[in-house]
Length: 122
Image (cartoon, rainbow, N blue to C red; front, side, top):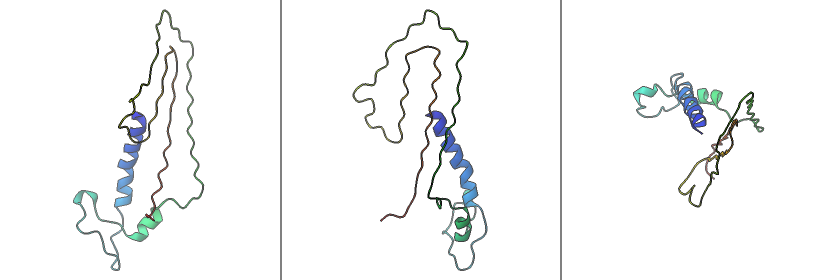
């Protein structure tokens, strides 16, 4: 989950400058009043329209995970049970993923794709 959060944070960090820097607003468009100096000048609606996604009706997501556990040895290992008990996810929010393993020499690969669609409220 930490890797997914890191990837999302990096994507947002690097995507913001692309969306926030661009052409100066044209005369018939009113820019946002007093944008924070660190963000630069607002871009025009036309510039945003060129960069906007979401026109596709089909979304294809692929995760390629190719792990390999070979030539490992586990000797005199003790493994046990792991339990998810009542209340384990109380007050949890967001996308949750639980991976459990009680073995030795196991490769656990987990991935999550989250598609978020923003639209005008009804």
